[in-house]
Every structure is written in structure tokens, then in C-alpha cells.
Image 1 (tube, rainbow, N blue to C red):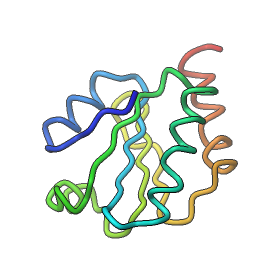
Image 2: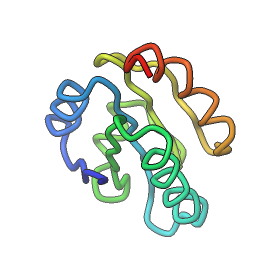
Image 3: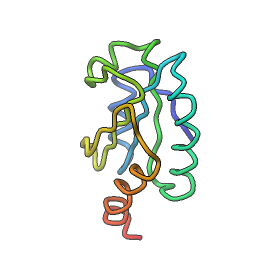
Image 4: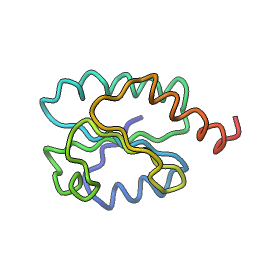
Amino acid sequence: MTVALTSLGAIEGFVSEQPAALIYFAGEGCNVCTVLFPKIEALLHQEFPRIGLGRVECNAAPEICAQHRVFSIPTLLLFFDGHESQRFVRNVGIGELRQALQRPYRLLFDE
């Protein structure tokens, strides 16, 4: 389930409540964002179900994007134990994301 994040406080709470979180920064009218997001949702649901997924609409909340140094979309921020672990910008492949998630996910969740 994707959580809509609309404030800095919501992001901080979301990241602190989850052992692992992925925040997807998107924009209205971004075709890449529209195509990529369902693929990421499916990947997390099928292979990494314990990673929380949040979404920020940059058009509606530019201050959130600026605070997190998101200047192009889509941008994905991956957090483990409340700390940003990796950042993916624009050209993100599902295979690349899967590979980046596998090892830390196994270490954190002992699977």
C-alpha cells in the first residue's frame, strides 16, 4: 500500500516508523513517473513486502522536494533504519532497483 506524503513531518514519521522505506518523488505530467511507479509497486509487493512505499507529488509540494534535494523526477530515496541508503534519479531500471534492495533487505529482515 502506498502512502501519500504531503508534508515534511509526514515523511519524517513515515521513515522513522518503518525499518525500510522507499519514497517515490513524482510529478504531474511526467510520463516516466506514470509508467515506472506501478512497476515499483509490484516489485515491492512481490519481492520486498516489508519495505514501506511513500509517494510525494512534487507539483503539489515543491518545498518537500527542495528539502530533500530532489531536482528532477522521478527520484527514489531508499531508507534503512531511518537513514538514506541510496538515491536513484531519472533513469531507474527495475533490475537495478531489485539488485540494490536484495542484500540490505536480507540483512535487515533475516530472510
